[in-house]
Image (tube, rainbow, N blue to C red; front, side):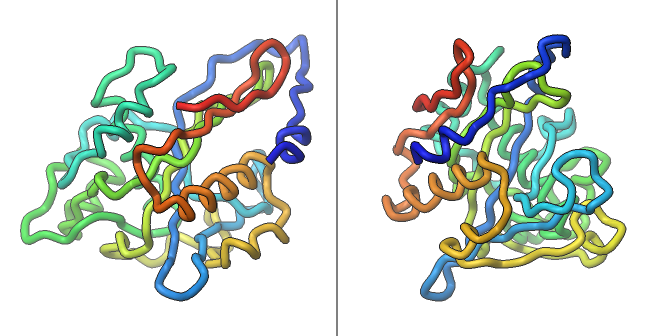
Length: 242
């Protein structure tokens, strides 16, 4: 862990405006149906300005509609509490929206709808969430694990306050084809054993999140465990605990 932390670059362009980070979420899907846990990763299109042609977890910015989406089972109170720490205007609604953003972004980038199938559709806002209503899939947040949080260092062109979530692949309730392909945001999806992800050219924070996930799996994915929080303080990258 220390070696990876040392690889973090805090270099920045002093003339670049210090933008406030935008709330974002990402989701790690875990397939534990066989002996070794496998992780879902997507390779980004080479034409993207942000981390082109590299493997990432599905994710993106929080949208206003994420606060309007209904859920079948809410966040574990311990997870909700950690999501609200060191956060401007903390609220249970914001914590829930962060988790829902990870689910929505996963659908938009992979076509996978996560949650529980029911006879009636959930109450959903217009936009991407309408697909959940059409498929009668209700997002279930109780089984989502808060793995890590990271804020992009200051004076970068893009800054995000990203929450890393994880959920078991058994949460896949429905899928829509055509979301992944040569002209899509993600050109391919791969399920890789967790220990084989070390061979990929991943961002440092992605590597750290995978290490944190491994430790969390070994500890039984207990929602009461502390969550690492990576950010820059006084010019140095630090890891705190939520």
